[in-house]
Structure formats: C-alpha cells, structure tokens
Image (cartoon, rainbow over all chains, first blue to last red; front, side, top):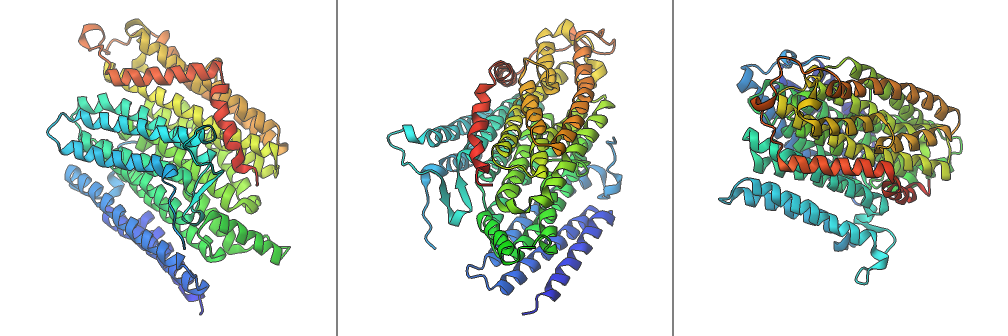
Length: 101
Length: 511
C-alpha cells in the first residue's frame, strides 16, 4: 500500500484548515475550518492503521474517539457562537475586541 | 486481550463520576440549588479518601499490594506520581467550588449546570494524571477543556464573557487539532498507542540504526505534540488567549482555569515527554528551555503595565508557568540523568503544588475585594487596610507568596527551582540568571498591589463603610482560610509538601 498520497491529502487538508481558522472572519466558518483539521487527523490515523496492519486496529479506534469528541466540540462552539450572535447581532470574530493588551 | 479492572484503583474516578451524576439529579429535585454545591463538595472529599488508601496501601490490611497498578494494556496507570497529582486536582477543585458558591448565588447563575460542568472538568484532570496512552490522554484533555469553554462564557449577557469564551474556544480547539495531528504522526511512525510502547519503538529505531537521530517525521510529531500542550499551559508564544479569557470569564472560573486546567496541561506535558519521548530529549529539551525563558520574561514584563488585577494575575500565571517549566527544561537540555534529573522533576512538581494554593488564594481575595468595592482596578484598592484589614492581610500573604518572600510557601517553590537550575550546568545557570531577574521584576507588580492596599489613601470615588456590605460569603471565607493556612504552614514547614514531591521522583527513575 502506498501511504504517501494519503499523508499528502491529510497535510493539505490540515493546512487549509489552519488557513481557514486564521483568515476567516465568520465564526461559523472558523468552526468549519477546525473540522477540516480534525478530518485531516482522521485520514492520517486510518491511513497509518492500514499501512501498519495494526492487529488491534488502534488507529481506527483513535479515529472514532476523535470523531466523537469533535462532534461534542462543535456543539459547544455553536452554542457559544449563538450566544454571541444573540448579544451582538453578528458572528464576526474581528469585532470581538473589547479587551486589548 | 484480557481486560481486568482494579476497582480500588479506579475508585476516585468512579466516585467523581457518581458525584457528577448526583449533581444533575439534585438539580432536578425541588430543593434549593445550593445543595448541588454541597453534593459536589462531599463528592470531591469522598474521592480523596481512596487516594489515601491507595497511597498507604502497604500498611492497610484489606488492601492488595501491587507496586504499580496498570490497566487497559498499560494505557491507564496508577502510581505515586498520579496519586499525588490527583490529590492536587481534587484539593484545588474543592477550593474552586468553595470560591464559586457565593459568587453564583449572588449572581443568580445556573448553579446546577455550573457544578456539573466544573466537576466533569475535574474528572478529566484526574483521568489525565493516570493516562499513559495517546487515546486516554486525548480524551482526558478534551474532558478537562471542553466544559471550561462553556464556563468561561457563563455570564451569558455579558459581552466580555462571550468574547472570552469564543477566544478560548477557538484557541482550545486549534491547539487540540495540532496536538492530534502530532499524535497521529507519533502513531504512524511507531505503530503504538501506549507511551511505554512508543518509547520501546523509538529505542528500537536507535538499535536498528545507531546513527539515528533525525527521522524527520518523528521530529515533527514530537514538536506538534509539545506545541499542543504549550497552548494548554499558556507558555509564550502560545499565550495570547490567556489575559483576555481570564479577564472576561467569571473570576471563579478564571481561578479554576489558572490552577486545575493549567496543572492538567503540565501533567500531560510531563507524562508525554518523560514517558513517550524519553529518548528524544535532544529535540524537546531545548524547546522547553526556550518556552520557559520566554514565558517568564514576556509574562512578567506584560504584567508590569496592567492596572486590572485579574489581567495582572493572568500574566503572572504565564510567568509562573515559566518558573514551573524551568527546572525540567534546563535539566533535560543539559542531558543530566539520575539524581539531578529527579531533583529537577521534584522542583517542578513541588512548584506546581505550591502554586495551586497561592494562586487560588490570590483569586479568592480578588473576588472578595471586588465584591466589596466593585472594582478590580489596582488604583481602587487604595486604603483597603483602613476598612477591610482582614482582606488587606490576606492580600499581603498571597501576593508576597507569589513573589517568593519568606516565610510564605512561594519562597520554598523558588528555592527548589533555583537549587535544581544551578545544579545542572551551563544551561541551568543561564536560565537561573533569567529567572532571578524575573523574580525581581515580578516583585514590583506584586508589591504594587500590596502597597495600594496598605499605604495608599482611599480613592474618593470608591464607596466604603456602610455604603458597601462587608459581608463575605462563608464559603469564600473558608476557601481563603484554607489557602492562607496552607501557604503559611508550608512556608514554615516545607517538609509537609516536599514529602509529596519526593514521592513523585520514582516517575523519572528509569529515564
């Protein structure tokens, strides 16, 4: 099995996610970018699992944990974004600058 | 694979889980919401008992003696190190609940949910102390941080609290993703999920290829993993979320974040670096050295210019994090082993134990004073001594302890840190010089608060006397009393806590 293409896909997806978190201004899109990063991790884990022929399928189990935790985190994140939208009528992260240095 | 559970060893976690559920049930019952706090306190206390029976197992008749209790294929281990740290988490959480009780009651917050989330986070910290595998550690870390995102935004109508929560959340999930990416690469290069397995695999690489030192993927994996933890412990340059989150979050949550959540990050960092990456110290040692030096310098210099005391304590906790990192960053960079390394580890753990109590105490005083005068600006604290001598005295105890002045506990923490730094050669001495300069800088802003409280005149716009109630919630008073007693007693008889630090030395014995 050739693993390189999976790792390159994972690294590319992770980089797109990092770019999205840093450059996107809408909080919901920032959340989506974080999901991309976690998806990259899952691709890595499953690809490594198959490549290593892991007898206890550790990588796949790890990926399941990552998926579960990611779902919980998005729930928390959307709750916070919703709260901010209610109070400010905007979900733009650039406008959150009440506190500085 | 044969799964056998050691229920005695798991009892603290099980009791804490029962408490978490108990809080939810009590919240549903038609009783006053304060009972949720009572259930939480009783549960934390109950979870402490099995730690003692496990710790003194050899002198108890009913206890089955095993040196190290290991479960789930070695990914969950209960040894003296994890017992001591679990004790620290439970004790700090106990104080944090006491601090929160009066604050929540006054603000009419959602008490049942608050304690539920807080205790979930404590459960994560307790699991963290025992986790010795990538999956266990990841789940524990998320359990620690997940609930705290919500707690940071607990003042739902307050724009600053909302902002604190979102900033904390974005940085938290970003760092978790980076950590996970590192972990996936660690798994890919070694094919193992438990830390002992990872270490053996890396030793295997070295045996197979004696010149091995640069498997590039493994280097990236190690650095990504450490970077994830650096966010959690708010080490410079990954600290920028800290002051904003600390300022905006409700102050009891800030106290919790700066102690339990931060200590959990340190525990994860110690376990990963000593257990999994033991043989790769040439990569992560210098990285930690730089983080330590940068954290203390930037943290202290930024704290100097703060007028808001909560924000000042935020920067101060970044700097204290640098002091905690310093011994083992320096020891590992110098490549020492044996007794010197054990000393460095002892210094780090002891500093962490003492830091927890003095920082919680400082935040408790800030909460009590802020309630009294309605401000956390250092200029408004002028003349605190004239109308609240007790609070002024406690301010002096905790802030001077943070500055490291004898005979308060902080000096012992600084002493063991410097002793360990000076003992490990040039890397250590260089860091000791930086730490010494920083201790002086830190004294300036800690002393500024104490000076305001004792010597400055009362500002005119601060209402005093009858205009403000002098009432301090009894739970908050108790928390301040416990923290002050620990800080003073440990300062005079350091052996009380240093014994606990000594017990954790076995952790690095085979390094």
